[in-house]
Length: 119
Image (cartoon, rainbow, N blue to C red; front, side):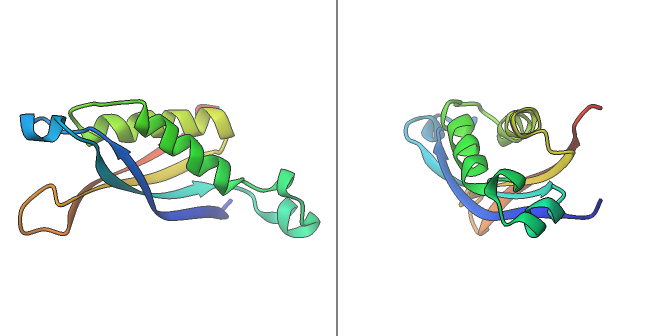
């Protein structure tokens, strides 16, 4: 299946970082998601229950990220991927997690992961 649902630039807030100055206040992170989903049923029925509810996905991502305060964004990326695959039963997802302003002279740094749900 090549269908997917895409969310770009979902803003989330949490404390993340290995340095002391990063541990004092939440910072914005941006999440890009491409999630495998068969869009035919929703396209034919025009019914939300046949679609991947991107509002519910967005809330789940924000809740997951907001509940953690890890040192590494890799930890957040893995946690979000596991949670989304489990809760929404999508077959796969590609997630890019951006940490804007993390390195001086850059717009952002990011990690990108691709995960598939166990059959």
